[in-house]
Image (tube, rainbow, N blue to C red; front, top):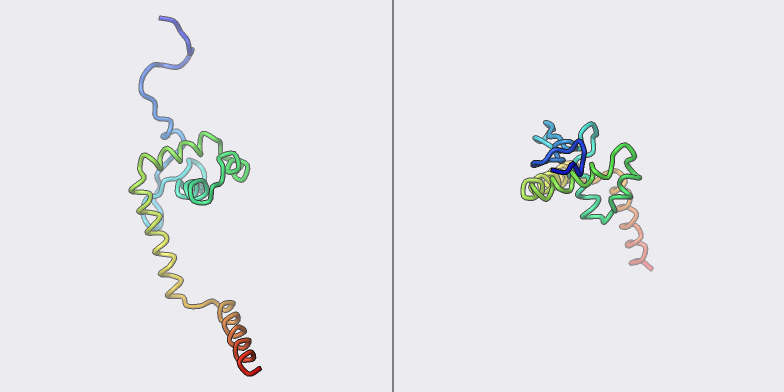
Length: 124
């Protein structure tokens, strides 16, 4: 047998395990790039939702590699239902917290100014 790729053995390889780890998070387990606080969800949102290229993500996050990004995307597609559920749960949590917190001080000021403008326009 010819040795086409010295040092590489034949068989199944899972590169994802070299790049992605599951950690315990506040809301349950989270998949992230090993050694970084960049979650698979962050990569998915950047690339799929916002259209940011893999090259741009590597430039924006210089401590990760193209392989890290592609492993995160592969992990997402292998576990799409679970990760989509995590993303929905995160979004629901944010929306609930925003409702419970009520309007911010800035939102209150904007509302008051808008009401004052409408009132002034109605009088004119």
